Amino acid sequence: MNNLKNQSNLAESTVIAPEVVSKKTNFFTKFKTSYGPGILAVLTWLGAGDLVTSSVAGADYGYSLMWILALSLILRFLIVNVIARFQLCNTEGLTILEGYGRIHPFFGYFMFGYALIMGHLFNAYMIKGAGEVLSTLFQVNQPFLASLVVVGLVFMLIGRNIYNRIESVMKVLLALLTIAFLFLAIQATPDVGQIIKGTVGFSIPSDTGVHGALLVAISIIGAVAGSISNFVHPYFMKEKGWTKPSHVKVQRNDLLFAIGVCIVINLAIWVVGAEILKPNGIHVETIDDLAMALQMSLGQFGWYIFYLGVFGVLFASIVGKSTGFPRLIVDAFYVINKNRREKYNGKYEKDPMFKWIMIFVLVTPLIWSIPGMPGFIALTIGVNAINIIGFPVIAIGMLVLSNKKSLMGKYKNNWFENIILTLASVLAIWSAVQLATTFF
Image 1: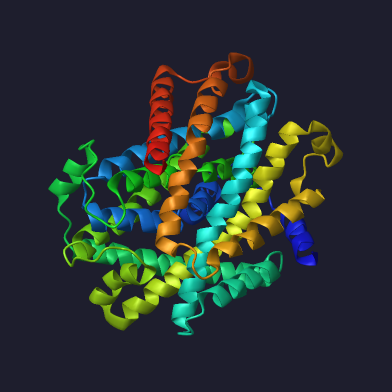
Image 2 (image 1 turned 90 degrees about the horizontal axis):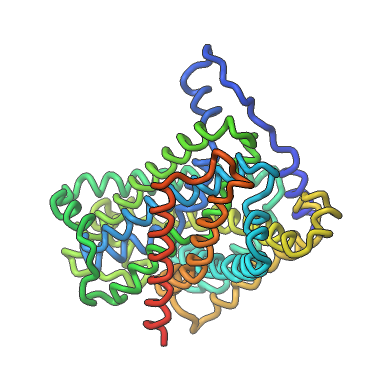
């Protein structure tokens, strides 16, 4: 509990960046001041979901599902931009979840339950994956025990000063993995014509891989456009000090940069799947299959880069989900119970509920690491497909909320944003129906 209390103190001591950047500052200082929440969002968004869904889609179906990724990234930008603009510009200083609560009490209850379930499930595949990777690296063949070690490490390190150093190491490992995938993607000389064809193809191919094409498509939508992780962006903005309508432009530029990074990384992973794994007949059923791409091209050095990089991605993501989702869940509960928000003055980390939810989303996912449960790849695809269930509520709610003139004034949606959000709502409903049809 002391570790969790330290995390609370750490969060409260966040330094707010200056609002105005001096013209005399050098490029790197200006970049650091002008960008930030988007980088943190990328580290939250880009996890095992992107790594697995993009590689599986490329290895099993080439570039034929590329249009799903392109559409999902466009929708992610629009949805997150609208969420951020609401946070910055609504006339009553509401959080995005408070705004949802204004539409109808249903939204508060739904978002609380949905965030609680998805916080558990997201950590489920990440903890399982981290255990498998750690078990492979140390060649002990005990993934469940390794998952226990991972959870123990995260629990002990959260809130301690040493974690900042460990997090920096994890980011370096992520950077090495990203560079390795970019190198392989360029070396593989991707078929640009096929990429363009797949981007404008708008079709679902017949099932040829281990995982059905429709399930993979829905999983991509769930991992990118429909992910509840998109709601963490406003929290990063608040810590940066971006709280006013004057920050709309810098926030949008920061988000564009973040989406650009997502495009490059996802495309590199997809190309590796389509140009290296697919021609060699390798279907991604286990994490070892995914490692084959780097091992075939870079030998044992590539093998170590892959496993260390994936461990860095998973470990950092587990910490991010275990500290970010409790904020989201408590905020949603405050929409239901306004008296509790007033009691703790809206400071989530001071609420004992925050600590218990953190323990819940960190410890309960271990049940999915017990021997006999679904494998890491299957669990990742399944969880990201289930993530689509909340997408219709998120999209429709956002469409209603961002058009409320009483709250948004001149910052309400323009016609183009309304068309795209309407299409997002239709896509969300279609995806949810398809998932339900496939399941039953």
